[in-house]
Length: 219
Image (cartoon, rainbow, N blue to C red; front, side, top):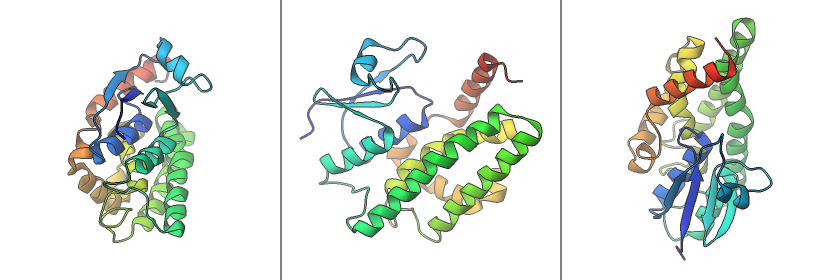
């Protein structure tokens, strides 16, 4: 079942991190290929000709694109260990809803926090925290979004934690002060080897973001 597994990725990508965490949770050996997004490899363009984006999961020569689809694929193919999606159809649908919410809200609002300033940035920060509070409400008193074990929503959201420090520095605010339960959840996730080894250092991400700001001419 395992076959040849290759991941085309870029180290600060929170989307690639999802796939890395899922592969690590399932203890799947794979070949990691770092992409230069300014000079995309022939393999990337061949494996994802439609979007030309990372991450791309290649299993036995066949590409699977888009991170949440990859995580679901990994869960279905290697279904004999560490299930990520619940077996109950309603719970599965709910998990997919919240993972989709992360995609639609957290990425765009986080980007607005570092790409804007003044009133526009203040609005982005407010909406970002509001979205995190909704996620905090869904987490409730559970250990993980998946209950006692790391689940689909945990895998979808935890990569953003590696970017939180950068957002805070750029926006001059504290996520922990506003969402202490969510940060406690993130720290629990980071105690898992599958997560800790899949996420880059927060300060390294911040340094990368400062380079991005220079490239985009954002002061």
